[in-house]
Length: 484
Ligand code: ATP
Ligand code: MG
Ligand code: MG
Ligand code: MG
Image (cartoon, rainbow, N blue to C red; front, side):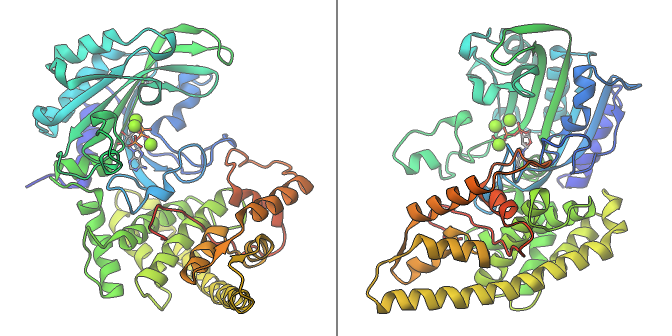
């Protein structure tokens, strides 16, 4: 039978250990010494200074299974979660790294060997991308030839542009082309482009037909100044990242990460709690709860606590999004979230012992957050109902932006939740005025700066602005047509 996710994780680390890599533990989700980064969002984060040469280690090859969160900050997949088969807020990124040691030839050979031999994925289903030279940088002919040498046929080698196949640490610093390995899941899967009457973009498409499983970054240049020339690095490096959940999905013959063993047990718990069987078609809310319970478990055990600003606020948004799906979509009337989180701790505690060590604390934080959120929710809902009834009686069609602002600021109802509720009564909301008020407030009280400035999201600004008032922030999301 197919490998379990734990077996895949171990196989990966062992594969690279056997090839001279040091097995390094995952670093915390809270990046050390990097106030510009919201959360650790890739395997390379803990090695940043090693890549730039500011720090040296006693090894030049490393392999990790890194805890990652992509919610808030530059990579923000939060709103996708529950609605694509492949995006999570929390996920594990498997990676191998070379710090000025081996380069493209070995990285490509290792990657291909692991995928085709160790995992046994059929080459018929694999495709690889290389950088096409967009923007004047030379195209990655070297990688192209190396992939061909591994046996990747020309018709399965795609040349893509800057967005997908060029990586940079920032405006300055190391950068270079990359190659992504994709797995063909089937052309019968609905495509977002086709749904709009356009053509499916294949490996370059946003749909789930071709799933990106592994990204190999070839750090070979350095930029000394913004938009400056690319200077070849004397000792180029390798940084790769493969999502464990996606690998498990293809290895286990599934089309969704949620159907892997990583999620089946968590979904079973959600399903037991709400008394509704899980299905791919109707399971968006169950997926949201399952995904977010993992993020909450790992973030809290790494020291983040729900709060009104920065990292804590993103955690709060994640938890409240899950609780809202639980209460409103799944009919969970009692405090439930901590129970799902407990299941996560039980399932992941072997691979990440810090979960077990902080279990009591993590569960307490979850329980407390849900209890206070439930109180806020009912208070806010009452107020919103009053406002809407008054408006309807007066024959109005549009809820004023000032009310939306008040609801937002004082009761923690983001505009889009207010909008959803208003629409249910056939009413609209004045977002132009609302944004005016937001802007006025922001101007009045310019953000003084803290560690988490990088997240320029409106909710964060709001939370900061509200300062010491108890902000009962409620996460808003606008997933197309879902009213989620
Ligand atoms: P995508 O295009 O699918 O959003 P990406 O190009 O943003 O992925 P990378 O930054 O290249 O992803 O990260 C390396 C690998 O991590 C990806 O190939 C994928 O396997 C995995 N990955 C990235 N984002 C997520 C996510 N939100 N949830 C689960 N796995 C992810
Ligand atoms: Mg992405
Ligand atoms: Mg991509
Ligand atoms: Mg990628």
